[in-house]
Structures are given as C-alpha cells and as structure tokens.
Image 1: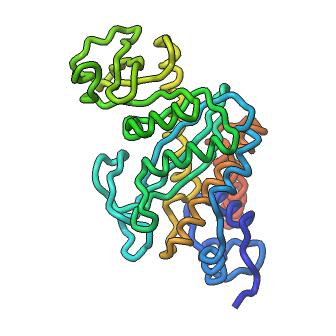
Image 2: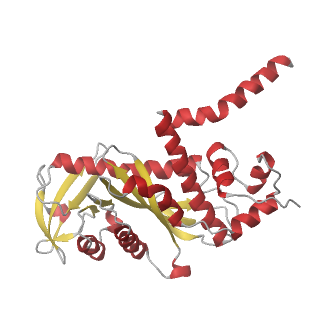
Image 3: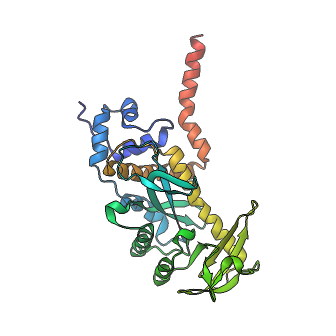
Length: 321
C-alpha cells in the first residue's frame, strides 16, 4: 500500500486538467507520484478543507475593491447515489423539480470590470446544523462584514428577499437588489402583479420594511420578473446592469459542474463530500486566474489541456497504419 500522501495542490490540479473522470482511482492512475486510490480516499476523508481557504485566495480581490455580492444556491445532482451523506430530496431550479442532491449556497464577488471571485460557500443540510438557507445567507453576510467587505450592492433572487434578510442587509449599512415574487404585498395589501409599473420604476411601500423602488421586466419568452431595490431614485439602466451581474453566478455554477467535477465525488462521507466541494471551488479560482493572465477564453483553456495528448495520439495512429 502506498505511503505517499495526496495534497490540496495535486487534487486541485487534477480537477482542473481532467475532463472525464474525477474519482480517486482515476487520480491514482495519472498521478506523477505513486498513490493508491485508497490512500487518496483516506486523505479526502481526513482532510479539513474549509470555506476560509476560499476566502484566503479571494480577499485580495475583494477587500477595498469596488464590486457587488451576488448570492445564489445550486443543487449538486446525486440522483444515482444511494448511501452518500448530505444527499437529500430538495427543489432544483435547474430542472424545476424535486431531486436528490446536495444543496450549496455560494457568495460571489463581481467587480466593476465583471471579474468573478468566489468569496464563501455553505452546504445546506438542516439535519446536521438545523439551519435554513436564509440562516446561512445572513451568517455569510455578517461574515463578509467582519472581513471588511464593502459591496456597492447585494444581489439575489426572490428566494432571499424575506424581510429578515432585507433588514439584515440594511443593518449592515449596505444596499440591495432582489427579485420579488409577483404576489408580494406592497402598499395597502396590493400585489405587485396588480400594479401598473412604468418603465422608470415605481416607489412602493414594502410591508414590514419601508419604501423601495420596484421595476418590472418582461423577457422575450413572455416571462415577467419583478426586482426591488433599496437604492434612492435608481435608473432603469442601473438596475438592468446589476441584474446582468447576477447572471455571473449562473455561469459560475455551470463551469464548476462541467469542468471542476463538482458533482462527481463518489465518496460516501459528509467530510469527504465537503472537502471535494471546497477543492472544486479552489480549482476553479486557479483556472480563472490563468485565464485572466493569459487572456484566453474558457474554451481555449480546455483545448490547451487536451491538445498535446491528441497530437501525440494522432502521430501514433499515423505511424502504425
């Protein structure tokens, strides 16, 4: 049995360059040092990779910089898992249905130039800690305040627009832009969908909170979205710009799942799954740094990884025919 130990750097590098298999067995087959898959599995279970590791890489890009905090959750698909801890039935906005998976809440920093930096992450598992998504949301906001983060705006969808959350943001001295459900009560028990909201927005009284500005957007497919904000006299262009920044977290989730093996950990224990999730985010951060330095696209970066191997295989095929 191998006595060599895996490491964060090796595991993250493996997640960045592989595109097919993400298991401990696969890493043991390609590792530059002798590693058995059992030793990798044991390392993943005994390590303690924590969200603060993500902050250590992100803080230089966040503290004393201008930008916004974008918040959203995603579900790691574990529909084929039978005995994996952290897996529970929950609603997935991706498939618009109840699925088996692991709930993950992400805090993202989006700078003025739209550079994206993951700040923090939490796993939603009420059976372990008794906390709801909104509990995690408020705790992450307070953690960001302690870390001296000063966002121009906190942006999230309607799931996080509860009164407790909005008041928490206000108490921290920050502004917010949130999606609002069409049946949200404003003024004197009026629903948003019943109001005539002009292009320049409408000032309404949000029950239990105070005066806010509300904007109505209609997508090409006919879908209607409502956004509220605590900003004083915002323009429609300002709100549209902030709504576009919120899309960055959807791109982030897609890239994490498609290129960093976020959903592909086969370990059964909670500790192993948590470590893999944090390491997946760390691998994304390092890959994004390379893209910025080399000024290459996401797809160019993927191609660079496999280009040499394909070239060598082509030479072999031509020489043997």
